[in-house]
Image (cartoon, rainbow, N blue to C red; front, side, top):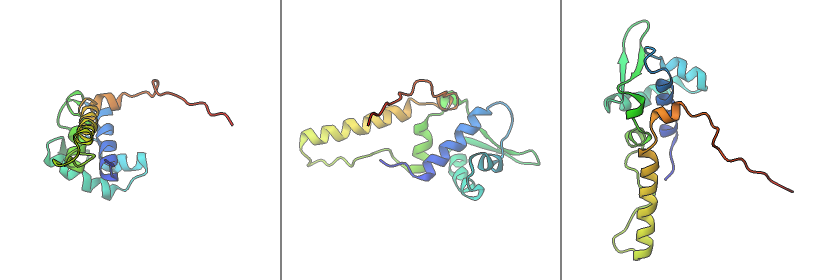
Length: 138
């Protein structure tokens, strides 16, 4: 499964909204400027997120967008499904060899598990401290 720019930028929007959760609405213009992205493209992505009731729009001079729910209750899986469709990295065929079929199912379930157990709160508060570093010798 390859996550397109729709999914990547959609997550960017949602993480920014999660970081500012409770502080009032955030404009897409400020998110676009912060991440050097096209505001027009972000506008196209926010519509399905709003239709899925993951975000709310606030009108007015100081308007923008806010999360519709607590960041701990919205998962990466919720966002990716809205923007990318169903999560299935490999098509599972009924007539496939049983061992391969089981492998594809395990891969699909592992991807779903990671996305469905990673909340916006997790992503917004990520500090990068647990990432492994690699040492290369030549």
